[in-house]
Image 1 (cartoon, rainbow, N blue to C red):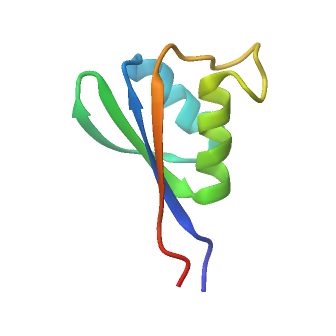
Image 2 (image 1 turned 180 degrees about the vertical axis):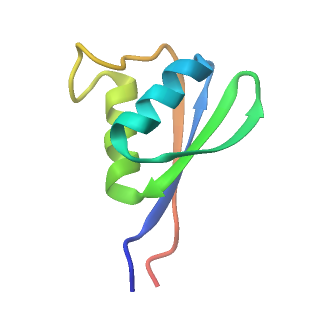
Length: 77
């Protein structure tokens, strides 16, 4: 079995910044739900890193996006 997947919705941020964050953390922009809601997806660990960077909690000098995140995981089995 491969890595566990995850998705996170970025709410209220800039699409360009999210696309750069996704590229930097090796995750994908999965969907543009609306102009203010962008979904990223990929391996759970990488999505968690992207969310942490987006919130400014892992490296405050990079990717601190003014937005909220909602994170969801694929079932473990």
